[in-house]
Length: 214
Length: 299
Image (cartoon, rainbow over all chains, first blue to last red; front, side, top):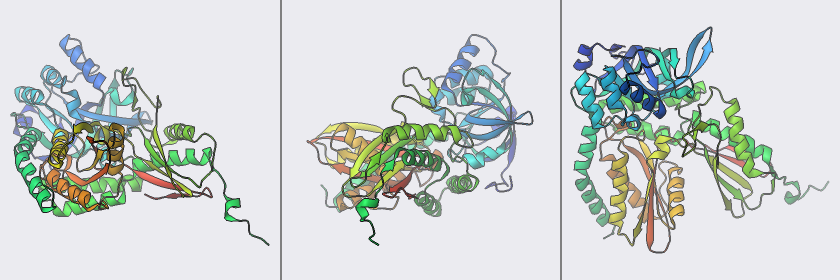
């Protein structure tokens, strides 16, 4: 914990209360404590959405909790599961399943990297859920905030695909990139980039002329 | 006493040496962000005006240093290794060199700490394991007159593989080529863990353009293409990519790409254009096996 880059950031405890989830704003950067479920598995998401739609239960209760798109590797030490490392995975991979998962579980927080599609953003607005964006490829520091794996479900899957429940302690920094009111930083930036593209192409044309190209 | 002529003391490069180097390279690439990339991140941090981006770039650099210092994976997704092998024509080889890469990969999987997860995926059944058909992906080339073998390892996962694209044009203008490259940049958005290195291959054949793009991502950041026409293109495309505003990890900012590297080949007139990306950790590492069997880690 001592060499966290931003030890002075505000701390939030998962699961978030609905009130806190709705109070968070795009760009808020925080450290997280508390409990979260995670998986990096496409097949896991498929299985979760199917189970929820058919009214079957999940391996452990997840109503109102936080659920992150993350992979993890753990080792056993004195009867506890100690993380070797954790890291976010690309959230848009799960766009087909997340609206169902968010609504059926009434998630209060989700997260990963790269954001989610507009159908998920709408589901999040309905239930009051935020998306935390995490830095990818920064596993050595991010893993320090993953204190312990508490349990796993669907152990027939490979390790990073199992539904895994973790205890976090000062996990982050994570940045609110989709809020509980229908705002998505990713969507805003994607739209801004699209709108800027004619101007960018025109500037490329000017640069080509300066280089003596027609 | 007569010293033996240089030709007489040359020993063949063996299966064992290549296997060990293949294993080491994959391990090194997972645990070290290349120095040129760290320097580029630091330079980007100095230019960055967005506070969230500044924090992200600081965190990235600190995480990269921690990975090297603590012998840990920079990213939890080890992906799968790809190797580029350049064999000097003055070398002699002994043993199954292609098998050395398969066995070197297996050795790394069996011994690396912390362990890596299963990422090798069957494209149709999605079954996952630690080995598979054509794994690892190895391409061989020869270097005329050289008495060494250079091997580069570049692991591929989502951020370093998923967002690549290729389109074949008929007699395109430079404007059309550059518009397509920018379309790829826009489509990838921030899904590839920016700031990225962008590799572009133009011309030749379908497969050759893809190879040029891939090899271009391996070029040192800050190096200029020897052809001024291409160097200018790289410069203006880098400026254009950074005007998109996606920023580090896609939370906005001035740094979406650390470099754009372009290469070209003559072809027929139909022009394949390939675009690929390497995520910010820019995993690549190279070693040289000398004619006497000595190994030097080059990056």
